[in-house]
Image (tube, rainbow, N blue to C red; front, side, top):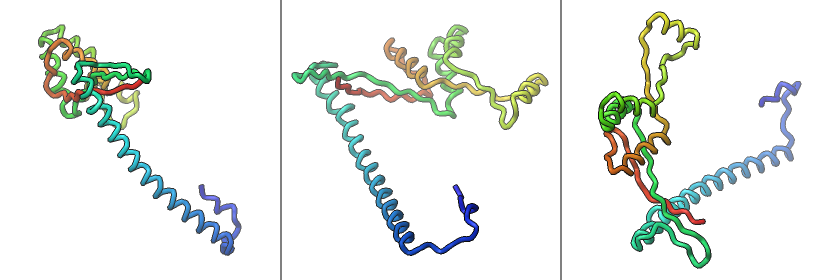
Length: 181
């Protein structure tokens, strides 16, 4: 916030005030550098934690055909199957069609998949009233389909649980995640 308007005339800074300002600036730069180093260190620790949670601990439990175990310390170690699915924006229409086809390609499949997606009317830089007027006048428009990530994840988990393939144009990342309670 510029408060210079409160001063009638600019004055030279006194020597002791200038020294104080110089000290504050040095402390500012020091803290900035410290935060930057700390963020890099935290990233390194997060990467190590992810290696334990997604690779090392699940591998040990999997080798014993376990998904959970209670330790002598009383802690419960669980390994859960996780899935993250996504559709690239450019592939939304193709993924929609692939999903309909994967569900049988008939009217019931179309209704099932249509229920998972939201349709958004795309008209840029106009008010709601103008959009309504344009629609009433029969103007052409784009209708964009979108699906929420959690809905897509649930859909993909369901298909995999039923032993079915994931439709084309959907990217799926499956992994195991450790929880210690």
